[in-house]
Amino acid sequence: MERSKEPRGIKRYAGFVGGYWLPTVLTPIFMIFEVALEVLIPLLMAAIVDGGLYGRDDFLLRSVIPASLVTGSMRLIFTLGGLMVVAALLSLSCGMLGARTAAVAAMGFAKNLRRSIFDKIQSFSFANTDRFSTSSLIVRTTTDVTMIQNTFQQIIRIFVRAPMMMVFAAIMAFNINSELSWIFMLAIPFLLAAMLILITKGHPRFMKMLKNTDAMNTSVQENLIGMRVVKAFVREDYEKEKFHAAAGDLRKAQIHAQKIFSFAPAIQLVIMWSCTIVLLALGGMRIIRFKAFGPGELTSLMTYTTQIISSLAMVSFFVISISMAKASVSRINEVLDEELDIIGADSDLKVENGEIEFRGVDFSYTGDPENLTLSGINLHIRSGETIGIVGGTGEGKSTLVQLIPRFYDVLSGEVLISGHNVKEYSLYELREGVSMVLQKNMLFSGSIRDNLRWGDPDATDEEIEAACRMACAHDFIMSFPDGYDTDLGQGGCNVSGGQKQRLCIARALLKKPKILILDDSTSAVDTATDEKIRRAFREYIPGTTKLIIAQRIASIMDSDRIIVMDEGRVTDIGTHDELMARSVIYREVYESQMKGEDE
Image (cartoon, rainbow, N blue to C red; front, side):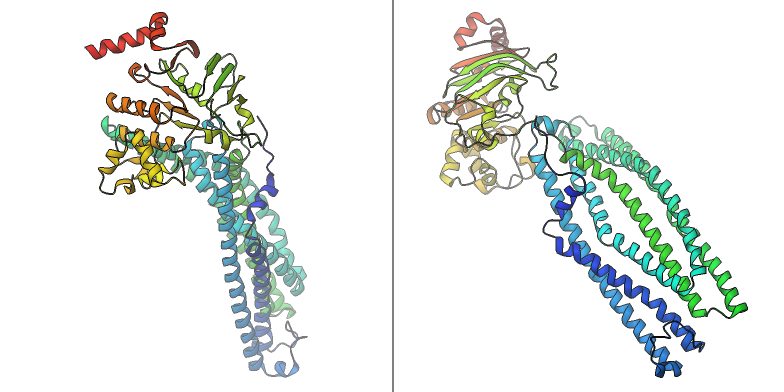
């Protein structure tokens, strides 16, 4: 197993900004201008109140206001009022531009992150995929990414705006009155302490909430996929109760997670209004008794205090958001940090023929040599042979063939194709030479033609038709009004099980593989059609090695050789007649099936 060499931490997530650096950089710039203009407004307001309304000659901005404006209070009021309007409009414009660039950057960031997660999932082996539930991977690619997207948007916008506002407003407040400005400085530690407690308590609650989200999505997914089974067994009420329970657990987890943060606004308001009351009391006393403080200055000082406390609360909320996103980051990192079990060789080696050899192969899904699924497998299959594989359920038939295209890797021993270990091939070249029809047939939304071209994107209509004729699919396809352009619907819901199997076989044939593996893929096909398919294989693809797993002896009895498996071992291999003569297991299976047919 090779360890992933991807960057981690901040460096990893900074890489997802690629292609969107311009809006990412512009957003903080717009925020700085917005804050600078917003901080200027209380200063202008103080000058209007003290200089224009009260006629004080020591008002703020006195040193930068022309003498002609100072002498005329109305001119001063209108001029400074006009500047306030201009500052407000410019601040609004910067805020709107910053919001837009932040949204563009965050959405681009999320797009790159989702693509990286999806690409990593696509590189998973079957063993990697088995470690995650499908619903969990969906939630991580959607909900968790959205959480991180919102946090990223806050980082480049709020996390720049709020600290800048605190710094600028604090400078202005201390410039107005340094003694009264210490009031809000004393309040800051209380707010920080409160937020720290909330964050510490909140993170584990959000982790639990996301796990409950996975559980609910699993319930929905299973119900939708198995809807026919649910209805066949009349289990709708049971499924409803199961979903209601999952949804109820999620609701409780959400309330439990959000409840602790509901205290944050109350804490912020208590601190902000406490500072305001103290400022009004002390500032008003200075104005009334000592005449050393202007009403406009007190008003602006209160505004700056509000800005500072609000900005600090905004930073606290941002840190809370980080706490929420931290749970999502850890879940996404689990996917991105997943060590790939199977990595192809950096090689141009191609599969030249269908010769297959197993040399002393042991395999375990758990990786435990004491718990083997396959043990001591030694096989040699010549190129072009048709090999049947038979055995009871759970004897390792599907596992055996899945080692050929490296869906899993052996625990010990080696698998060779064309005389080369499968690990010497790139995954692309190896799997291009091997075509496999799995037990669970999967078709995708789109037309029949689109699905068939998964086997060969450049296949001509003649090649598609030829493959479908070999798979005995052409006639039923042409019975549809739209023929090969018929829309299959989601998962091929518009065709029967047998038709779906034949379409999957045709798709596999279009690859023109050196090795064709059919894993019980004609179980829903009648025996006459099954025989036609096997006859077509013998006539049209004699050079392709064909491995056929089947429960029906009739489907494999004319094979060149038949492999008999029992408890993860190859107990015998030979022709039908040879096995009837010497293999007890094969003979018992054959006689039980023949007896069933006779009855």
